Image (cartoon, rainbow, N blue to C red; front, side, top):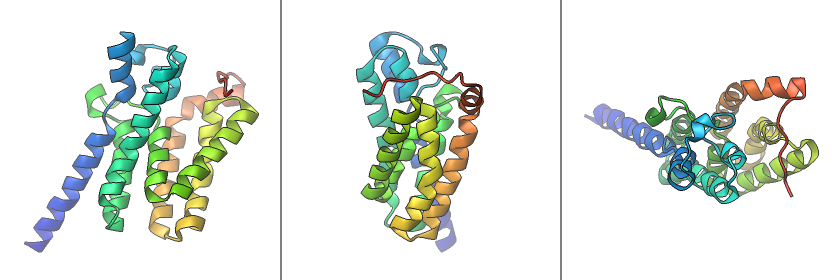
Length: 199
């Protein structure tokens, strides 16, 4: 009976975290307010950067905030148990990247990654933001800033939390992020990645 209860609990955490993470905020907001299908605009991505490229700063900021909350809320709900906390982080992140509502074609997870950082520690979230902004100011590309931030977060998470499980989940999330940015990495290497305006 105890084993069945544990199985149910873990399944519940996985399902709730995935469903929260899979809400396609960029797609829904763009459909409702801009009357466009964001999956057919720009890069086809549903994340905040592509929403920004579609021409709406307000919708891009709103998308970023919602996507960050998608990562933070499940972790904040379940992190009193570290195993459930890291499980919720993983599946909210997977939900954003592979939402069932859009045939598993979602965003690249950076805002959701940021939300997960804040949920585990405000210092982690602030570190992510500082790294992202500094890198973006230097290289003028969102993907370079994002990849730099996710590269450093596993190390920073260990320094801040001193928890190997949290560090391991950030390593896994960073690996997934790099895989999701494969096309961006190719464009960066060719010098073809679109620039963004920071200020």
